[in-house]
Length: 345
Image (cartoon, rainbow, N blue to C red; front, side, top):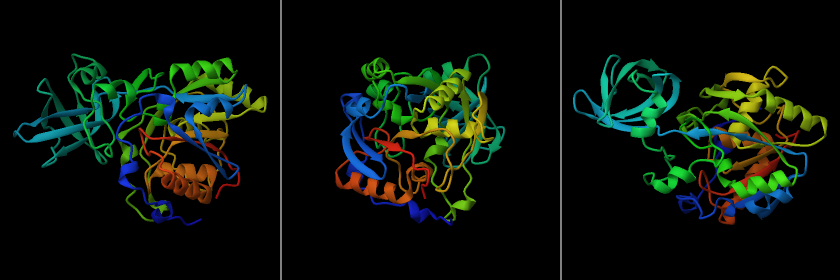
């Protein structure tokens, strides 16, 4: 199938882009897409959509304080957004400045410490941080929480808790796995009492998740690379769930990408890896049977992923319905519960 960027476009009124979270995590709406049929529900109804023995797979990554402000040696202003940490004292980052810094340049960040530009790695800058302190601790103390570019305000104290899942524990992401933001501790406890099982993966979301697709012919697009960890306990839990005829439900596209990326050889395996898997309609999913996800940007790779999972026409109808019915979109917006169509095109 020859697909172009325009196949994944839709019109969204700007006022439907959620700029802040609701007062309660599970107060969001939930659009259910199952068997090609749509139903308007609330996220609090999730326990009625899952069964004892089903398995929810969560991404336990934690958002780091990845945005830093500073100056170049010349005095010019810079904004640094960490893409991913690649060592104890090194990271890849986006840098916004009037003129890009060259290899060997030093940047003064947060008026507190210096970093050295080691060079370029594609569209990112390779930075070396001071070696006398843990990089994550340095970012936590001096960096800012990086809200997505479509939220037109600075992060505040409320975002410090609400732009993290309640189960976040492994620092490394520069964007939240937003499907998980709807779960509170009460919801998790209710699901456990119902006999719904949980398992964990870690995929650190990079800033590349917000990068636009720059080619019209999608066959020419190359995905950004993301690191994942799949514990053996999760592999075993998935195997037990499948053997019992129950469903594996990925909580978020990040969990789905981690599972599918780790199963590219045909069988899901535990361990640490990296994925640049680009999922388009026609892709055959190996692990997940259902997906909980937020609504995604027009022309984005994540919209392409859910179109592969549920079918292009069902997703188009679902998004048109969500726009018409006033759903809230993107990171702080409402959610969908989607069941997989094996014949999705």
